[in-house]
Length: 312
Image (cartoon, rainbow, N blue to C red; front, side, top):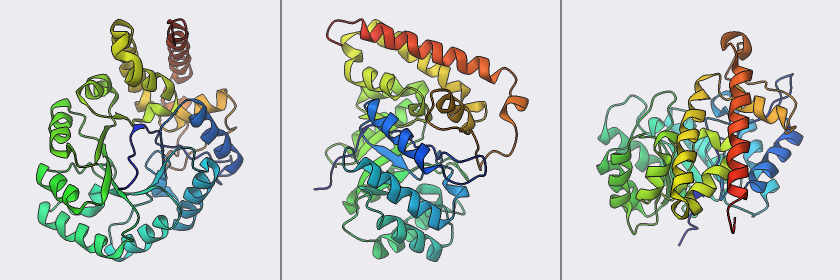
């Protein structure tokens, strides 16, 4: 049976130098920061990694580098699935499958690029499954770009029935949908991991085994505590959940540059350069630094409250 992949799974940033090249020393520090904050797995070469703006060679090297840096300490899942053309998808996914990741993640909108429905999804999926290595476990990601393509219940069952999928990064942002999917996947080995901060605590309490939203790039340890210890301290967990929701709203202020500003402050890497963003986030989003100040202040306050609990 394939390794189970769940828990707190950060969607990894890609640090760039001011010249726009991948900052590999910064990537080492970033990876070690995730691990020091207790993550259960890492999702490399995803949308937060700016995978749509990386060449195939860069995607492959990035995945290989993360796998080598982690060195088996936690599972690493990789995607790099950005093409609509099926032949290009086979090429890029075959290359990504060979990088040593613990699972290869397929992006749902590329399984139905024209949004034609279940039959197109089924046809594209079958084409890829026939051509990808059978010994590499697979995941699914309802990536919002270029459009958010949610799985129907029928499609989810289809994927489960293949026996090849171990993870769904759920981007439904709807608690009832998460609950329904948990029932469908029960006993299958497919982990339904929510990615939306607004329902994170409720989804965990409903049985979603973790969290894989963008603010795992700022306080993954707080999501981990909420998952593992929140029910023992419900009042603090509810207070924390509210803070995490409000903090996550700042994703709209130029993410992933916003998260890179945080890592620049703590010394993970030196530049907030992004390929996906071509504007000055401080000029477009006035007081963005002040917002980050408050996110950091709140994060530190909750870390202190947790540290003061008996047995924590």
